[in-house]
Image 1 (cartoon, rainbow, N blue to C red):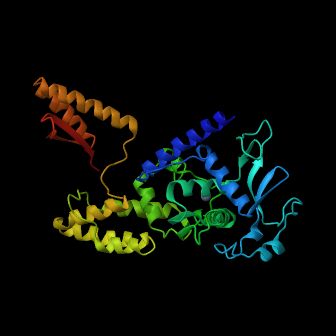
Image 2 (spheres, helix red, strand yellow):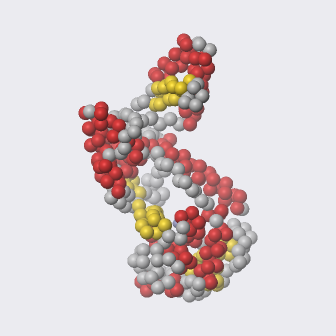
Image 3 (spheres, rainbow, N blue to C red):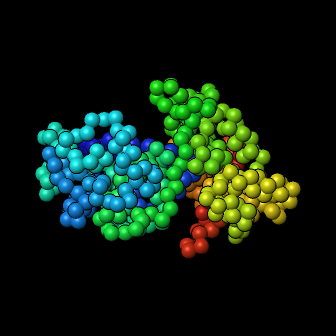
Length: 370
Ligand SMILES: [Zn+2]
C-alpha cells in the first residue's frame, strides 16, 4: 500500500517539477516527503500529549484547542464563534468541537505506520509542523500558502508547533496567495474552466494554442500575489506582447536595477517590478549601454527573453549535432561542420565556439535566438 502511494506521488512530483522548470522557477533546496518524516510527527504528538495539549480518544489522538489560550489568531476566529457556527454534529469523543486529528488508527486496508497509539496515519496539519521544524527550525521567517489554507490548516500548524516547542510564533511572516480565476470566474472542475499548466504548455486547450512558459510566468507576475490571479486570454496576449518588445541581451556583470529590487522588497510587488522592468527595456531599446542592467533585472524576475522553449527531445537532438560537428572539426572536415552550423542557425539555434579553461579543448555551447 505504501509503495502504491509512492508511485502516485512520484508521478505527480515529476509533472510538477517539469511544469515549474518550464515556468522558470528555481528548484527548492529541500523537497521533503511526509512519508519520510513519520518519526518526527510521532515525536511532536508525544510532546503535545506530555504537555497537556493533546489526548487519545476512540482510535484518534486529538489536539485540545481549549488548551491554547490564543488559538485562532491567524484566522482571527475564536473558539466560541467556531462553536456557534458549527454546522456539523460534534463528535462525542472530542472535548471541543474544534479539536482536530493528530493521529488516526488505520484499518488493515488503509495505509499506516506503527506508533505508540497503534498502526495508523498522521493528520494533515502535523505533517507540516514536523517537516518545518526539521528543515527550518522551531521558528522560521516565512510561511507561504494559498488563502484557502489559513483556516484550518495554517491555524492548526501554528497551534501544534507553538504548543510543542513553547514558542511565541511559528513563522515571523505569513504570505498567502490569492485564488486562481479563469476569465474572471473561479477556476473549478465543476465550472468546466479548469486548465493545468501542463495543458497550457503542451496542448491547445486554452485559446486554441500552446503558451510558452515565459509568457505564463510574466502573466502571473503582472498580478500581486495577494490578489486573485485572473488567467485570461487578454492577459496572456498582453504578456506576450511585452516580451516581444523587450530586447535580448546578456547581463554580464551587471546588477539588477534598484527600481526592480525596491518593488520586490515591498511585499513582493511584482506588478511594480514588471512596470520598472518595462521602463528599463525601453531605455535599453534606446541605448544599448543600458542593456546589461535590463537583462540582469529581467533575469532576476526569471523572464529574460533569451530562449524560445526547447523541449528535452529537441535539446538532446541539438546536443548530438553539436557533438557531431566537434568531431568533424577535429577531423578537419570543415564543409560538413559548417553545414551543421548553418542548418542549426536557420532553425534559430546559434553556436558559440570557445575553449575549455581547464583542458584547452574546443567546446561549443548553443543558444536559441528568437
Ligand atoms: Zn502545510
